[in-house]
Length: 544
Image 1 (tube, one colour):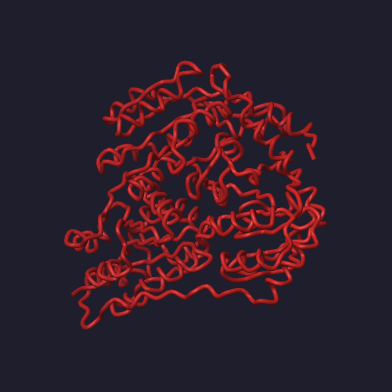
Image 2: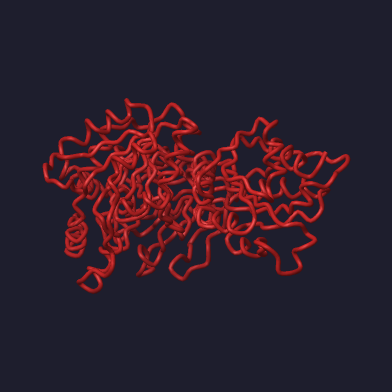
């Protein structure tokens, strides 16, 4: 057995199902072994697309997504998607071929120090310098990537190590540590704080999803009668239709849900990472008592000084605290929730064209089942999705948040469909984000992943215009021209539709789902609503 064979055996031992990537000269040893492996290699059209696929797979499943590139430019092309996964705490293992160790000490064709390049954006970055250590390296990479808080691990495999003979080495036993139950004293302290609160509020983060604690969170909120706001990444941990749901928080401005935070005297942060929504934006006056419930200790931040840190298993913590605490007597956020619901429903029947962002998201929600999955790209549409899309289940609205990288939606949708073949997967993207990784349409068609891609077209970098207008009152260099998206899609063999009226969107989405192939929907959007929203929030009056 050689190093490449041992490496693939180790990947099989980790129950890797898919590897996303592109073949190259320095990874041909692995590529050859994969021909006889149950692992499916998904050949992508760009390494960034491969990394985004691994990113979304990791986030949806909790198992490390795997991406593979060759050395040099192949490896550097992984960086954006890999960094996105690491910052959003999605488990990912990146693998790159490398030149032989006999030429790493000098200037040589396509040679870069990949270990140090990936080190700042990973939990663990290493090079296999001997074939005998491959089992330890692979096991550690997956263990670290999947442990709380999950993230990225990178392995550099030189071509001569991949080809070297190795004797009497086997993959290591897969093990992972169990998250402990929090200390009883801390759970009792949290219960006392909640019992004495006049207006407690829950902020749920993505750690609730990672910890499979959504049911426990809803039961906790119901038992203690406490309203719940979520971060962008935790949409759906409590159904938006639930009477205690206040929707998502995260706009870089005051919104109606901010009224709840302004009033709260105790904020219970469950599975929350400060990268999801900086505490300076919701605890700027530092007056609320903060309870931190998470497997990891609270990050150090002057606006996130916790009164009580409950470190350990989230579900166990919520169940115990709910038994100890005294329930709130009334839902103090009833009027606030009703205002938020009214805002979301306000444009449900709008006939304006181009279509308002609010209307697009209302219609999309009506066309999809509760378990269907929306993958949001990054741009102005992301802010509207985060604010207006009504997620009813965990992991049904995937938003790149910490790194916030454009180009994730199309490749992310491919991975989501591979993992969820019976669900409708919709990539929602701007025209700019779509063009960054639109080549993965070919990948989707080749491997038979039926996805729907809704492009919000405005021929501008809409989010940047939004910021420019807010700060300077004039746009700067944000315009571009799009191809004919219908012809572009058809050139790949995909189907495509152009929405021509406000009442045409729902029938178009339903037809796209029925087509059961890759379908692009060109949907003109009215982004004048962006500045209207800015003005509206600037004049916001809290309903409670």
